[in-house]
Amino acid sequence: MAADLQQEIRRSFNEAARDEEHFPSTIDPRIYHVKLLAEFLGDLDQKRVLDAGCGKGRFARILKERHPPVSVCCMDIAEAMLRAVPAGMERAAGSLIALPFRDAAFDAAYAIESLEHAVDIETAVAELCRVVKPGGRVFVIDKNARQWGRLETPHWEKWFGRRELEKLLRRHCRQVSSRFISYWEDVEPDGLFLAWLAVK
Ligand SMILES: C[S@@+](CC[C@H](N)C(=O)[O-])C[C@H]1O[C@@H](n2cnc3c(N)ncnc32)[C@H](O)[C@@H]1O
Image 1 (cartoon, rainbow, N blue to C red):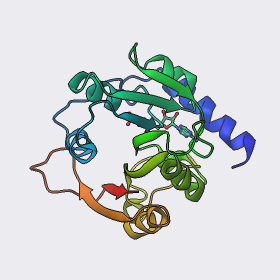
Image 2 (tube, rainbow, N blue to C red):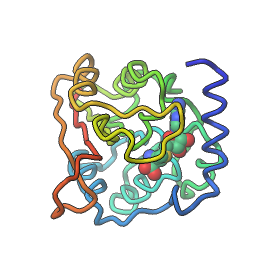
Image 3 (cartoon, rainbow, N blue to C red):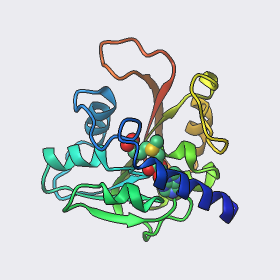
Image 4 (tube, helix red, strand yellow):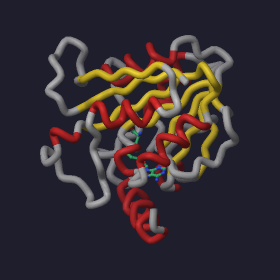
């Protein structure tokens, strides 16, 4: 990605961090996104997990509250977002397309509504998988390309086809699936959100 576009994205999210309504620091733990993430990650005791494009760390906060022995590293391009990550959690400034971690540094990694801002998606998926140990889990939630136009989006944002992201994940992971999800488990998904689940 061109350096000036990366700077523009960083600047934009640094400003957006002030907007607590659209970029909240907490999430209702009953929301299905949280439930599916926690279920898929499984036993977290003594595990090290990466929240890639963490924003204010609203998902990491819940994982840590539920499993205090888990170590969650919150990584984001925008320092203002990272400043809102709860105290006591590891934080790292960096980019999805050049993660500042060694290979296999984590037991699991997830990217929730952040990959859609990575611009160079192939590299971002490769990076997410690179930093996970063999046998570890990779989890992504983003929006469905077929629903493009439903929401206002910045010019760099990209939504994904279900099979498109499955294919990219399969380059690095042996078990890959995806499903439509909605905020509430008992509400039929309307096609906007997709979750991709992979085992490296
Ligand atoms: C829509 S927010 C989602 C935040 C968080 N995952 C959540 O669900 O609350 C997207 C986040 O991705 C971050 N982001 C965008 N591009 C990034 C990049 N190239 N590398 C790392 N983080 C990035 C933004 O700064 C922002 O915090």
